[in-house]
Length: 335
Image (spheres, rainbow, N blue to C red):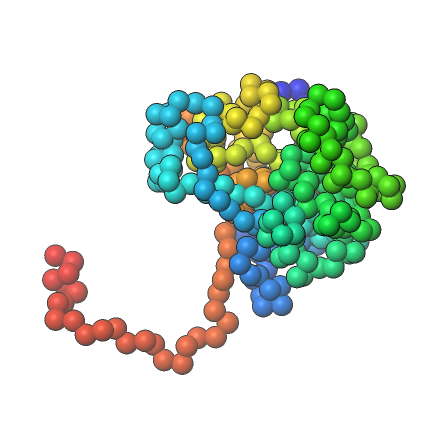
């Protein structure tokens, strides 16, 4: 990346020098749990990486307006069609992630919240809200922080909430509309009052195998969170991309949501380039569900390959279903 304040390569080198265990690359042995006891359901996917479980949860989708990308209509339509889609079939994804690592139960971004989104209802069908130890916020846009509260109360009563200081101060400061300032402050208020609000002011290891990096552009304090597992790193990159069909093929194209489009594009190119040269994984708030996968070079740009999902039958049907009779032979059909 362009002179990042916190380099994953430096971290790995330092860990090796200290005699720490080196993470293995993600490979075919990366095991996604699909057993019934994991209760994979609509909008939830479980993945296991050694002793770490990563759960991807959909907060719901809606139609994606490709015109939100900062490029000509013709260029956007060209890229969308190259991805075997049309502008009318694009979906806008909102993803929330839950990670269980040792004693830590971590949520990364919170979606729109109970009643407006689906993710927390789905998450809380599997874990208790009081079991969440930490919530990591990549930036302070509503689709990432609205789930912090429910009816004015903390949705994660015992959790510490980690948020980039620059973003927090910007969105609760005088430089934004009063309504934005007020609502942002309200989402964080229960945690601040409880002494659970943690403002991140530098690139650092937060706890366990989680570290924070700053990559502004989308917002002034936009952060990536890096999880180091036995099988490699997972980079939770927030809103590094909004329209995957467009921005992987041409990462120079930013979205209208990006406050500094040029800086956002530079950060995106650096991240995609680094990940394409590694076996590490990318996870994003608006990437096609499950929102976690690999980046590889493709043509003059990149492409995003989501992690595979298994949904295997546990029992074979007693008898095969007979095919309907036909007067046309297979040979004739092929001809």
